Length: 97
Image (cartoon, rainbow, N blue to C red; front, side):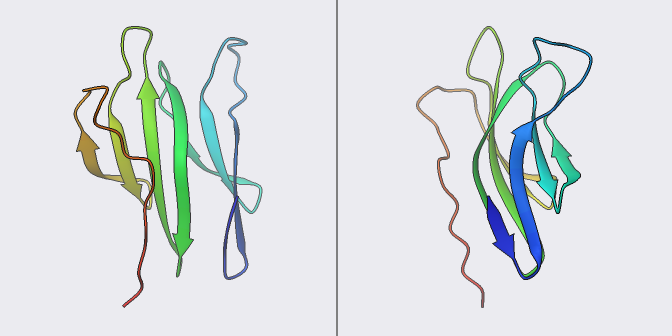
């Protein structure tokens, strides 16, 4: 859960027609903000919201491997680490100038 001014961000399971889906969703004030891609078991590792900007670290897992680690800023991919299981993003720190 993250708070920014009057906005509340929460992480939930995305509900769709596949009962075995492990997709994740971020809700902004109880409205869908981000849904992980279909075909991946995504984990939302860290979530920060500052001055209306949302920073999210996601780890997309497949049945074969750990998948890439991504930093999303306002739902846009900004940084993607390779799929080496030792390259992990675990936290994001935001400093406002």
